[in-house]
Image 1 (cartoon, rainbow, N blue to C red):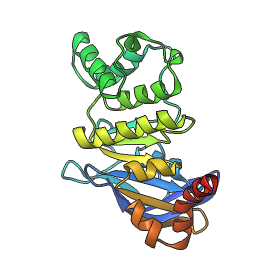
Image 2: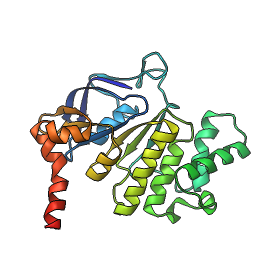
Image 3: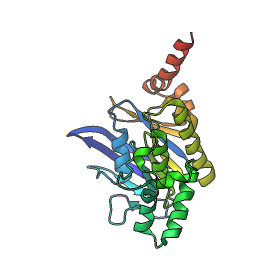
Length: 251
């Protein structure tokens, strides 16, 4: 995916301008920045839910550039897991997962169920009862994993995750980090990750894009560890704030 000269607007005000970057095959790209900088808004533009006022988002994995907001959007090529999971409450977990296959494939019911159970197992939900459970019966971490499993049902080359660790305890968050690393390593999925969790950022991201809330543009793009040491001052401060708190507690 390639983002060209993109501007972000929300509530009648400009959040970001002149955004230019690409998502490389098989990488984990984290989008970070202070609250209100436009992280989730950027993600919605990238998956086609919001139309940009200026700039464009191009899907390039098929060998030719296709506008995400054009007449032939890459709906099957991009999997999305929203922050709250967004599972249909009127459906079981299994029905949630099988729905994309019903809409976009000709698989029969048995094959849809087989693939749904496989994706649940891939996401770490191995209990057979999970398939027939209601989303409300799952813990927060299980709902996040089920949402990721649904996003993987069409085997997309790109997976977009909006704050997957939000509201989770440290252990559950660490398990989600392990899942993201597994998907990258074993499946080869490229992942765009919106996060404010520094521990997750350093654990899983190959590169990070920093959206500066004051400058209203991206001021850094690169490996998190390198930017923590050599990035612009606001980026270094952002990436070291969590470590400073940890050191103070330890003292």
